[in-house]
Image 1 (spheres, helix red, strand yellow):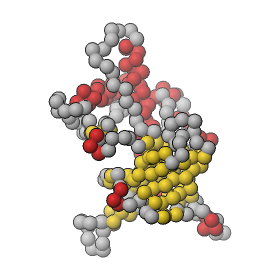
Image 2 (image 1 turned 90 degrees about the horizontal axis):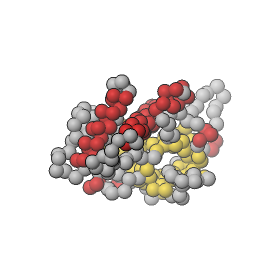
Image 3 (image 1 turned 30 degrees about the vertical axis):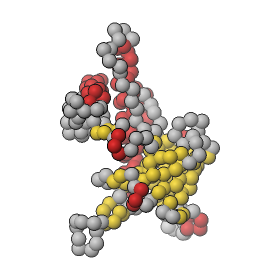
Image 4 (image 1 turned 90 degrees about the vertical axis):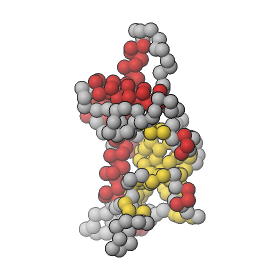
Length: 253
């Protein structure tokens, strides 16, 4: 059961990091086709979420993003969760709850039942899983070309996706026991945990839209060269996958 103190929600969780595999490995090994929960690659830990509306990082069309702190036991040697109270972003699906008879205006944040919440976050996790492999495919192509050609006229940007994983909070205590003849789910809540990017809202940019391969930025805007590079990566991914897949909606800082 979650404990809320001064708008800080504390959870005991099992954390499942999203792994990274080469696209060739994913295609050749059926076990790698999607991100799944692997108990052998999980950690027990403590998650603290700042649920106050004043400190919310953002709210999109279907997810909220809150500040959070992650402590894993034992901590990984490096990377995500390797330090105590690692500052992170905690994301969770939501739906809008309006007063009875009203369908617009101010609303409260409603959460989905776990049976609906978990598939939504699994989809988000698998998008990150596949996107990371597609981006690595692009860099493998670039590095192969650079090895047999003249140096490029300008430096190649080296970017990556945030480290992330799913955190499951379980029902604790006597309420977790199933009644005779009744099947219950011990998972109480699910969270998508992501690495916190330094810089804040002012440094955050959206480089390419979902529906357009052209950069969103103008030629004189900061970040335009990176947006052009992202357009190039889309072209490489589209060609190398035979038109099956490419990354869209590049954004970050």
